[in-house]
Amino acid sequence: MGTSGVRTVAPTTSPDEVAEILRADGCVVVDRLAAPSIMDEIADELAPFLEATPVGGDDFAGHRTRRTGSLIARSTTFRSLAVHPLVLGALDRVLGDHATNYQLHLTQVIDIGPGEPGQLVHRDQWAFDFFSFPAGFEVECHTMWAMTEFTEDNGATRVIPGSNHWEDGLRPSYDDTVPAVMARGSVMLYLGSLYHGGGANGSGGHRRGINVGYTLAWLRQEENQYLACPVEIARTLPVELARLMGYSRAAYALGYYGDVRDPMEALHGPTKAAPGFSPR
Image 1 (cartoon, rainbow, N blue to C red):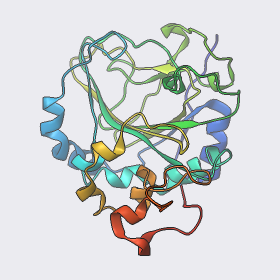
Image 2: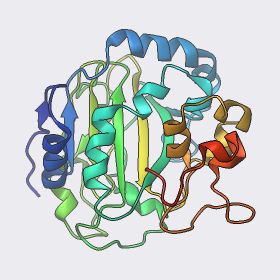
Image 3: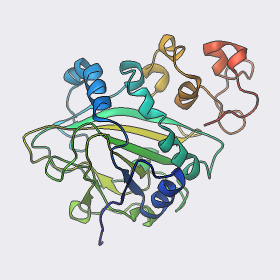
């Protein structure tokens, strides 16, 4: 199973170009899309939560890895990353092929501590009870924002470019992967069909990345956004972000409440409800 490096593009790259590479390789890095100061602000806002998060309880989660969620509620600065125009523009093209809208799937900081071995190589879409989606039918896309430098030594995410075209249920080895090396503020977009895993951290420091997942809106979310972000906070969010969290209908009627009402009415009343289908 031969591999090649992860393609890296400039932050001025168009959504069309990012989507084209995503479809071909299953992953792409956008260099320095966010300023390092943004990462500093997010780290400051999340500091007490990061400190309080326990490490994982099994080999897959990582015994030296912490996963801190509920980022929309806990970090106001993070919210701009979740709705970054370049990211959503690429997702419109890659996920928009298969559904009228998509949603936030999860938000978490993944902190890989010193001494953590490499993670089992997997596909994120296996979260859907290992359902084997048709090849080329993309239902999920993730972003990994580099809060710290991502190096081969400190546990940069390991990927197999092009493996999104492989058959399902394979068990590639860690040696089949390459590291997604990134500067702080860079982001890697990668499909749910891409074989990948967390890198081994052989350094003395922590590797922190902000993992934001997006899925077609007719699939169940991994992170329950309605519990992760209390309704009193959801009411203060921009409408676009609230809809992305799930306050919108999918397909024709999925997600309505009460007397077939748009879920946005639960936050803001009928004036903010969308007629018919809602964006994303």
